Length: 154
Image (tube, rainbow, N blue to C red; front, side, top):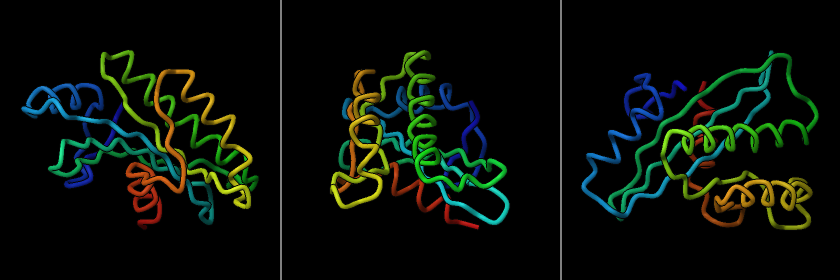
């Protein structure tokens, strides 16, 4: 699975890179957050999936994958559910490669008046059935914040 390093846009094999990064970090306080965001553009829907490596209090290191799906996914629910699926796919890939994922940040809102609230129960249940903590708004969502930035970058 190919991802890019946000700091330099270099392509890396995600599992291999993470294993080496974690091994060389000299910290026992490492948490991995996965998140996804999407944006409809003129000719398709752009998805950005991020893996945020949070090391203690020293900050974060971000890896990402950005791709476009054609045609545009106009229906809100399938587009949001695809964000959940993409995050889970990365988490399962990492687990298969011996890497523990601590959190999946879901770009969904716990506020009942928010449109995305209708997916919270199903998405949270899906993620947590895998033994991974699901974070939703209004919690701080570092992986979704990074994905939002990447998906909105031209």
